[in-house]
Length: 283
Picture 1: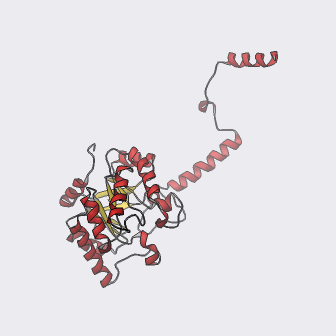
Picture 2: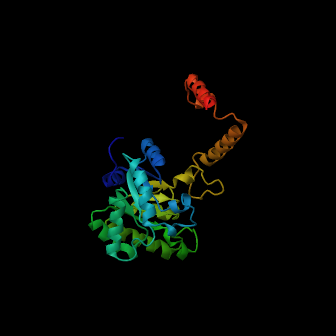
Picture 3: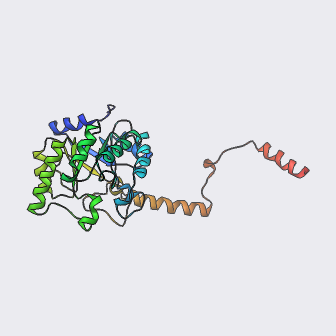
């Protein structure tokens, strides 16, 4: 459990059939808890735009946002492999900028690999980043940065043409050298089909258990958004409810004077207070 997870672990897991586990983190305490739990990899996802920063989608997230949160996660992680999302427009303006931004996420942010959304259109950018010595994870299916093109949050690959293109893109990404591939909100049978035909591990999110591993957005699986749970997620513990109940109890106890209790305070020699009182009187 103490050995640092690397891309080699992903390769070996594919060969042995060992399921890969990935969760997102955006801060030090969450990263530390996940790492201590034994998670294989932590994704510092641009989902932070929605679940941490309150944006309506991921397109508002900047390089500075990503690096800020990656640094915190890196400080809380010893074993898990850290994968950082390259944010919107950080790899769409030429290979030089793609390599430069990918390098920043590694050198400044502290991640071990980067993830890019897309297939054929960004192959040359992916090759350039890999040639610079940075491992790359691919991402196909529903790609959140393309939400405006998709017209909303929708499953992808439901027609023959869409499925064929996704499979072709998956093969192109593998050929380009990505060490793994995320398939998001892809029909279960299609995701399984692609997983079985690739030599690299396929990580599913909303794509069924036929994939080689799974990734979830941690706030989703902790129930921190009580009004909405994505279909592809599962609430493993109702932390949102616990947060709410704890806050209500705190408010009640402060207003009633129950908190802080004696055990929550610090002691001082009462003679000091007597001396202070005398000093005030003498003035």
